[in-house]
Length: 152
Image (cartoon, rainbow, N blue to C red; front, side):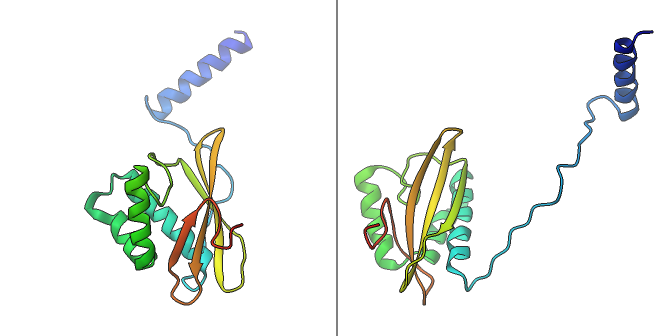
């Protein structure tokens, strides 16, 4: 019996031992973890985008997307966002008509409010960046756009 035949035979025996259709899963390394705290604005922005994208992906059953917008956005900005969406026929939080595959939040600094860069991934080679500004005191988002409130 040559080595190729032994390999095929061994694979067949393993498949029978595991049961047809069973899969063997290799360990991918150490477990991942995510942490945050409600007093941290970057955490809050990341929580908002994660939950909002989940809600939109799940076709917003139960109005979760609107509830999240109500909770995380200032009342004035909600009105601005609604006007932007009507004019542009797109989702104002995502600035798009579709839903990204992934997202990343990065602290962008500032003194009197928090500014974050949101990187939305649409495909292997396509990303967009948005700037999100949040008040320090009330932890409410008051701006989403291509540039920050300070024009950067």
